[in-house]
Length: 112
Image (cartoon, rainbow, N blue to C red):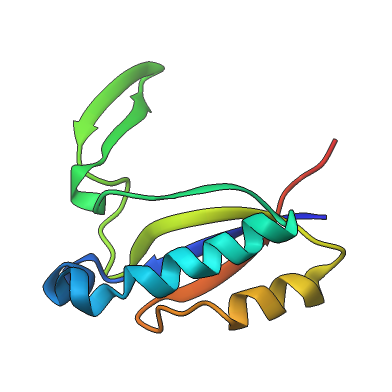
């Protein structure tokens, strides 16, 4: 089954840490292990939510606005797509995520 791991964080807290506090070495090792095992299908770190552009619709017409869809203390800081046998395997992977400043939300991907 394919799952998306949504890496949820506070953009402000993450930016305040600086590169040393973010421990990119451990994070890259985590992704590297998943890639070598063949479980990682893709993923990326995202820019802070304040850099988003949102397209909505008003009276049937597209409306483009600067900023995220909704204001929130926590946002999606990145994601990974994994292919594992079941939810238990996805949970084990999420439990080993090294950046404890994040929460990891696991969502199954609709397969048609």
